[in-house]
Image (tube, rainbow over all chains, first blue to last red; front, side, top):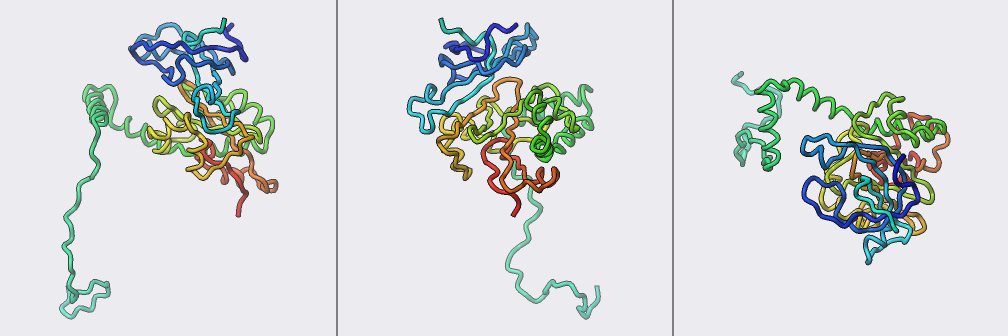
Length: 93
Length: 220
């Protein structure tokens, strides 16, 4: 079972560790909603150093464009979605 | 060569030629640091016997033989066969494999354009693209300008491609940050109800499967 469910609000960790990180900077610290669960995938943060390591749950997370960019020019319906690993997502409590 | 000049090619020996023919020119391409690094690595792997030059060449040839036409066939099938469309949206890899397009190592997710939603794909971190299905991405897809701007001002970017998405349509930008590859299933253009699957596939363009254009019209 995955830790997070579709529809759940999450915040991306606002963290800047060194290494091969595939969580885009523009999403760090931003709030979004889990759109779907993809399954467990190899972790690029360890694979980049030839260490297979444990697989990580991967989610599609949807962000409102207006939440990412305060001066966003477009429709309030517009969204950006990214595929993020479980350990980058914090639940909203 | 005969002395009386009755040969029939159109080389006029009397005119003043006016310019010197250049000697053969070398390739103008200047390799970047990372290109030189990858060439050096390839040469080392060949030298050490890890791979052969023929294997590298064959792999490149195989990669280059994959074209957006493969994706177009998947889209056209989804347009004419609702059961296939459902399978494509459920499991892109399995659906593509049904048509003879194996996708290995990544998960293919089809995202469907509807009257309410328009999808566009980017990889802000590098150049992730459904290469197993569409072949190599266009150079603009890999440009920093496209990658940085399409998440920031997607409607302005689409406008530059000649694409206007009405404000009531939600624009959904998919940033391919992990092992998922996205295929946009464009909306079937109006006026194509009498076309067969092959004719429909001919309408589907690469850029429509990235999502920077819509297929507005049927054949003219």
